[in-house]
Amino acid sequence: MNYRTLLLLGAICFATLPLFSQLEVSLPPNITICPGETITIGPPIVSGGNQQYSYWWTPTDELDDPSNPTQQFMPWMPMTLTVQVTDTDGLTGEASIDIFFIPAPVFETTVVNNQCAQDANGSISIEVTSGDGPYHFQWSNGQSGEGLSSIDNLQSGQYFVSITDANGCITPQVTLVETISDLQINAIATPLTCSDTEDGAITLQPAGGSGSYTFDWDHLPGNDDPQNLTGLSTGFYCVTVTDGVGCNQDICLAVSAPASINVTGLVTGSCGGANTGEIELTVSGGHSLFMNISGRMGLNKRIYQGLYRESILSRW
Image 1: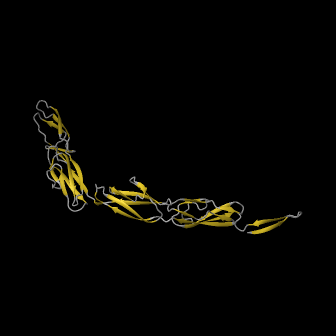
Image 2: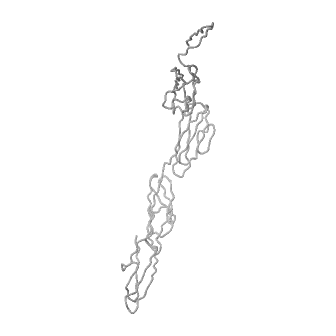
Image 3: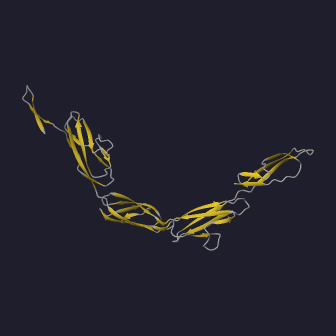
C-alpha cells in the first residue's frame, strides 16, 4: 500500500493517508462439498475505494446472475470461483475460492430378476467398494438402515435407493428388476351372429415367454386344450396360458350376442275391397341394419284386405 503526506498551511500539522491503488477483497476459505450440493458464497469483504462497488463472478456458466454480490448455485465439478470488485472510480480488486468435491462412493450392483411376471423372487444387492463409511441405505420399498445394502422378495419393477455416507453426502441409485419370461396374451372375442345361434368364437394370440404354449380352458376337461374356440354360446370363458418354463397368465373374456329382433305393426284396414290398407312395422333389437324379404321397410301402403307375412333379416 502506498501513502501520501498532506501539509496544512497555517498550522504545523502533518497527516499521512493511505493511497489505494486497488481494492482489498477477501472470500471465505476453500470449501469441500458433497456432489449435488447447493452452496452460497458471498458477499465478499471489500475495503478501500469509495464504497460504491460492482461485482463480477467467473466462471459464469453455472451462475444465474454473475453481477450479484452473493452467489447460490450447484457446482457440477471442482472449480475455482473468482470475484472481481470495481468501485465507481475504477479501482479494482479480486479474490478466489477453490471448491472441492468429497469423492462419491463407488459401488457395484447385483440384480436377480424374476422368472415369471407374477413372481416375487427378485433381489438387489449393493457392494460399496470405496468411500467414507458407514453407509445408510433408504430403499423405495420402505426398508432402511445402516448397512442394509440388499433387499429381496421383490416383484418386477423399478426400485430407488439413497446411499448416505459418513460425510452426509447422498448418492441416489435406480435399479430395475426385470421379468425373464414376459408372457403376454392378446385375445379377441367374436360375438354371436344372432341371439339364438351358437357361432361365437375366441382367438388367442400369445407372445413373449419361453418355449411353446399350452392352454387350459376352465369349461373343458383336462389341461391340454385348443388355443382358439369356436361354436360358442353367450357367456364368460376363462383360460390359463402357460409357456415352456411354467410361467402363466389368466384371462377371461365375454362372448356376447345381439338383442332379439322385436317387430310391432300398426294396421289400417281397407274398405269395400279397395287397396287402401296400410301396415307400418317398427323393428328393434338385432343389428343396426334391417331388411325384409319383400324389400319394403317401415310403411307398406295401398294394400288389399288379407293376410300378409313379412320376414325381417338383420345384418352386420
